[in-house]
Image (cartoon, rainbow, N blue to C red):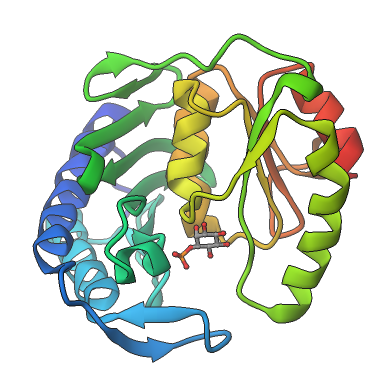
Length: 259
Ligand code: IPD
C-alpha cells in the first residue's frame, strides 16, 4: 500500500515532532552526561539522543503507519509506504553535552528518494526553520533568503570536522588551504544549524566531508529553498565525500578550491 501525502502535510508533522523532541531535550540539557560512544571515543551519545529519537519514531509511525524511518541512533524501520523520514534527534551532540546553544532536532520527509519537507528546530535560539519543496523556506514563519553572493576572499565559511582522527588530520590540511583565501572560518558544531545559517545569510558558505544523511537532509532542503546551491563534488548530489552549500559563483570558487 502506498500512502502519499502533500509536502505541506509532511512538513506540519515534521515541525510538530521536532518541536516536541526539542522541548524535551531542552528541559534535560542541564547536567546531561555521556551514555555511550559510537565511531570513536569523541563520538558521543547522550540519553536524550536516544530518548528523542524513540519519541520521534513512535509519533511518526503512530501518525503515519507504514512509513519508513531512518534515524541516527537506531537505523532504519522499513515500511511499505513511499515516505521515508530522516531523523537526527540531536545534531550537535557535543554542544548539547557542554551546555552550548548550537544543537538542533532535524526531521526530513523523503518521497521516492527526494526530500520534500524539512524542519530544523534550534531550541536554545528559539528558531524553527522549515521548507517544503517548491514552496520556499522560512524561519519562525519569516521567508528566508541567502545572503547576497560575495567572492571567495570576502566569504565567511562555516565547516565541521568528523570524529575519526585520520579524517580530522585530512580536514586540517584542507583547512590550511582554505583559511588564507576567505574572510574567516566558523566551526559551529552542528551541521544542520550551519546549513540553516547559510540559508539565513549568517554565513556565506558551508562545507564538510564525512557527513551522514541525517545531518543534512532537512537543512539542505531549507538552504536550497532559500536560494543556496547544495551539492557534492563535480555536480554530484551531496554525500559522505563532500557537502558544499553556497550561492552560485562563490559555490564554483569554493568547489574548485576544495576539489
Ligand atoms: C555532527 C555535527 C558536527 C559535524 C559532524 C557531525 P552529531 O553531528 O553536525 O557539526 O561536524 O560531522 O557528525 O554527531 O552531533 O549528530
